[in-house]
Length: 426
Image 1 (cartoon, rainbow, N blue to C red):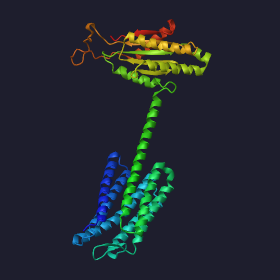
Image 2: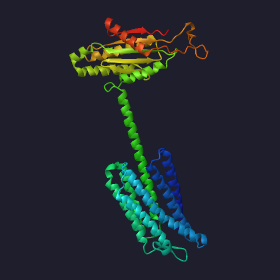
Image 3: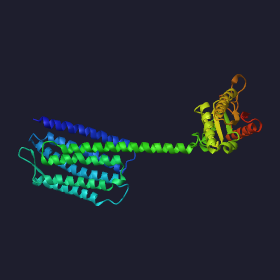
Image 4: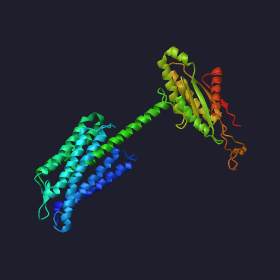
């Protein structure tokens, strides 16, 4: 008749097997690139499953005394001890792969752990004939042998050597990884000491499995933190490479790239306005008020441009006191007059508040959609015979040149206003 204690052990260990299986699957799925360290982590989970499964079998077959039980109880107990020694080698390898940082020369401590594992397994095999570590009585009940403590001493020494490696290479580890691996030693050592002094519960197996899962959870947390930290650093570097540090607008290179991409995709339906904005007499502002004030007005103009145009419009700092903007999906002169009117008014208000005469000139190249009477698209250069014009017909370089000429015209004839040149798409 199975005791309540045996049923409790079996239940806990079977649940442990399921948890280890989930963890092993998670590690396998979450790491497409299977490094040696990843493979060792999966092997440790498999070892934990086999350890718990073997111990559950030893509890299940410890009562009946038929032939099946006779062999199963011996196989399961042998497996528990053997897997413990194998797991010790896996863990030592995991520690080394974590702390080594791709160093090829393995320390003596690692080789010693491997040797201890082999010695433990050899003594375990001898135990099957001599009762060195444990033996079974006539009722098929497990008893500790005279050298049981030697089996535990081998395990404790192996763990101590792993701890020595971890501490020796402490500088190679992030704090969270170091603490998670240090935590692994606490439960197994306490369980080993307790189990060496008293027998009744399989605390050692459970402690190893629980500590392994805690360590891998912390390892996963640290990996995710490192990934997001690297991702944030990458995003920051990309942002800084594309944006002007003073204004937060796109820099010339990034702005040009996005504008050219838009122009390359334009067809006869699309329209836009490309414009240059320049602070008038900026050298005089710098000479009169100083470069700090000049920098302020550069940031102010950038802020006003960002405020009046939509987020999907493209605005960049072209260089110095000059800005470039692509207003997409519109060629309406009324929209242009309204938005630039707001810009000039806001800039005039800010100029008045600071008691300084600051204004901007604007040159615009207007690219209208190609249309005929009845607002129908012209039917030439068609695609697939559907009657719709699919030509882009817009040269980005030519648009830039025309917007620049429009700006020059504004500065020559009437600063503080804007001039529009219409792009010919015929």
